Image: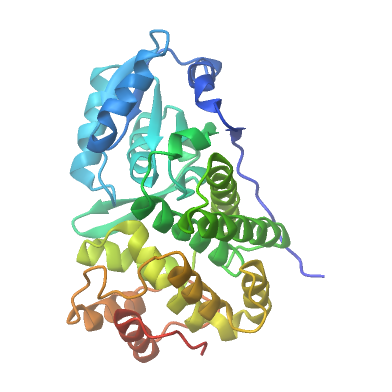
Length: 356
């Protein structure tokens, strides 16, 4: 038996069709009376409509969320929260909105409530990076862990496939790394494998024309489990790879995760063979590797399969390899420049990944 220490991150989860109606109750349950609502500019009207249905417990709207959570945006959000004397931050949307809410809560030490409309799963962790002078600076705090998360599949129905599909693969990436990251435990692995299977099944249904409340609910369930498993296990090569790609070349966050995942898994396979077998099985694949199963999943659901496709310049391969190998995250297979460069080159071309 393997010795381990497992830390469960406390959070209240309200799950199900129509559960967004409980948002006001969940805010007041925390003793809050003046909640600031964070969203992206594109969700401004939808979030305003949501606020209008509440009983005078809103500090108004903060519709400035941007991907990668740049520091100037964070400072603006914090200033708005102070000016309006916010005693709670509500995120409405996906990981971008959650990131702004977490960053505000970190400094003001006020609770976060998250109403989720995509599959990213970032709402389940006490982690957040803030883009500072071109570099991602990571933070960890109990204040950044949402006290309540609301998963209502109805709120995801208007989100197009171009957003919902890669956000789901992003969630799968959380579950995958939870199976072999430095802090993983048997509990993390069980939760992650269930989440990976649920999300993969949901994405296949959604992408094949069987989109429905049930399928979106299955996706939210998978996102919750994958994110929860990662929150206590930590991250490895994949997250370093995706974060370097996104913040360095301004690639869309979930797209970077989607393309990078099969290749980072191929690189890591030799160091975590049991975990990889479980991941492949969760994806319904028993013949090929976990890396190839993830690559094939992207093809099946119509997701991008190459870095070239999502806008990374070919001349950036060398730079990305140096950034990943010079400051690596812990990983079951050691991070070395030459094989990392080869991995990125394969990902740029979209070649089928081969486990090392």
